[in-house]
Image (cartoon, rainbow, N blue to C red; front, side):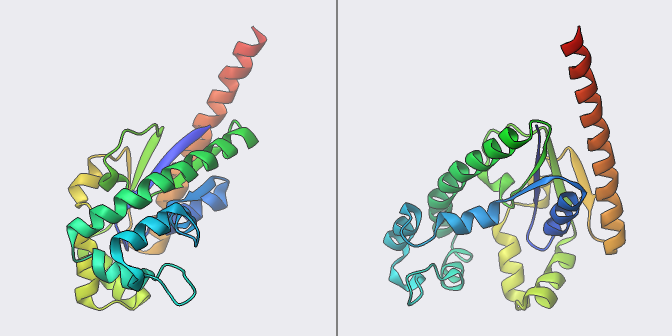
Length: 213
């Protein structure tokens, strides 16, 4: 198995890269989806969030009200750190399970772990490759306004709450520049996939030779 850590700031086009890699044959594991699973009703993580932030972060049917929680944590670094301390361990457990499942299903799989907060987590990792989606802050702000309906103030606050470009780029083995047109981004992703596929074939070939020796 070949494990890619894919990261990028909000509005950087990271999801576009992940979808393209999945179209090409990668196994896509989405940390945001796992984060949603981790705080489903009845989970220890949701109970801890409620204990820390109160019942006002719950909807009437007992689910997490992400908008209400976001209004609290994205303007308060200490509150955000508290939330991350609850959610990150739960997501890591789910991630370990999903990666193990992918490896058992196909030992030659190329797995893309789509993780927005890789730089923020500041943890040791075992990725074979880290790919960073990179776009200027102004580009990302305009995307959040036009595509997600945020106000400029909200978009800028969300961007400021995340790691800096410098912190993410310091982790990068490969940078995908998403500032340009969609076709330009996809061409970079396709080039990356071609390189990964070639490495995978070389690895299988070496294994076959070793096994036949």
